[in-house]
Image (cartoon, rainbow, N blue to C red):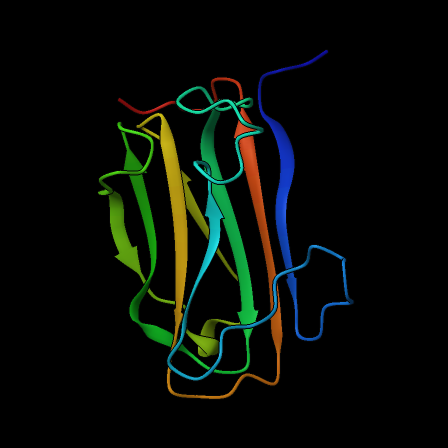
Length: 139
């Protein structure tokens, strides 16, 4: 089994998710959603996530800009008791259309949040992929 540069789908978002699909609905006007939190999604292996992602790749398309610096990637060394910035916050801009954000994972736990602007979204497409292996692992 190849373990270098192996992408694994973590989350998917659509405008109207089907009940029980596990897909992420769009954030409401001015709302914050957590797209991924490894402390909540680690298959019960607290402090030792089942899949050691080296990068998280978020792709977003929405009908309105996100909030300024509205996409955050945070990390934790203590199972989510404290969160630290792993990479500077970024913004989604509709003028750019489909945008991809590539976050290095430098701490044992990771969390990605998305903050919507004041707009009500009529388009919401989101995909989060985790990469395992050693693809440009940062220090």
